[in-house]
Length: 507
Ligand SMILES: [Ca+2]
Image (cartoon, rainbow, N blue to C red; front, top):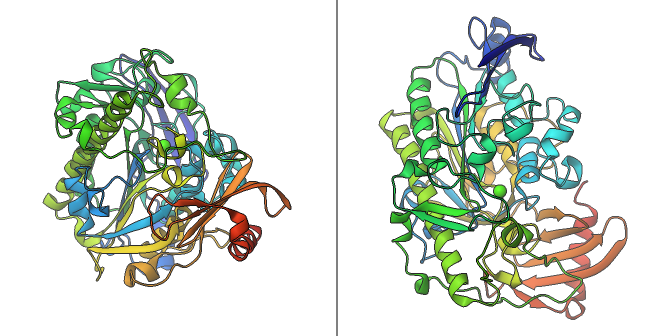
């Protein structure tokens, strides 16, 4: 069944919304009548950037999003994990070792990415974009690119809802983020019945049975046994089409792994011996008040057959192996996309970002979770390359945050950024990766906030700005990437300085 509905976008373009409801179909896309660009938009782009979008001097953007990927990247010195494809891309880009997200959950972290605003401003939950986008006006990253003549495409999981629909089964309206994308979709004809089934998909179309399905799966099949194989294949096909396009494009490719369930083809599990994957150093539960949580996503949404990673070391090792397998699987899918970019010779005018929306603790601080403000939950990989960069292959250890991507991308593309965003362009660090940090990083979760500088992480229960500090956790990272918990009373000067940073974080 296909229904077509005509309506107009905010800029007056006539658009058609197509909704497919068939075995695998559900997609929403907007197609401009008579082409994606109006003359007026082209002129606007020319005036703003000083370049014609038709002369191919306007850089395209490939934004690759990976879901729940902690800093498990071989190129970052994590020796046990095998990520050869993104390691190779690290040689073509600047790799950031200290990137922090604003909120340790999918929807709100992506809201910060797309708006340049912090969690309390966008909302802290997974419906931050769906519920609050109408307040944001043009302060939305793809809207800015679209207004300046770019085709904007979102394949897979870029916002919280893969495909961009927030209704039943994530296959029906409302749109999560209207007027941002020319096309937002998940691969059609896959065996999964809906985007929601795809998000937590098991092999060959099996959906999650919440609370009962296993937390991991190793299926002896090809890459397309799982959704990311479909996303990669679709992305390659779209790149083939974009290579022929005269219009600039912003192409978001959003992969699902290594998000739970930790599922991947068996060949990726075979890369790992569970006994070779190290356990975290500090797995002790932190005394209250703390950012510790009950790991409800893992322990509640999945069945464990009576096993508990807190008490069963063999099961803990299996879960770590499964996370590593899912990481190597998504690495290989990213590799397919990057290889096509190279084959099509697109690099000369292409900005590429690889980003993850947050991390995931695999036992650190007694959590198997995101949804807290500990290092493992809010630190994630970030890699950026752009045409003509001089420091490709560099590692940048400066502290950066997700909100910095908005002004970075607009600057690299020669577009204006809204003035009232909280990020800072990373261009100075791309030019000089040894330069000092531009500012600390701030993260928020429900009822708590955190600040991270080059050495310290402090988590506040309450709000420093509201003079409502009910608890402090302080970690020193001078000697350990996991950090060492210290007594705040032993470091009053540090505490005062970090509290002041939290008070002024919105200035
Ligand atoms: Ca996520």
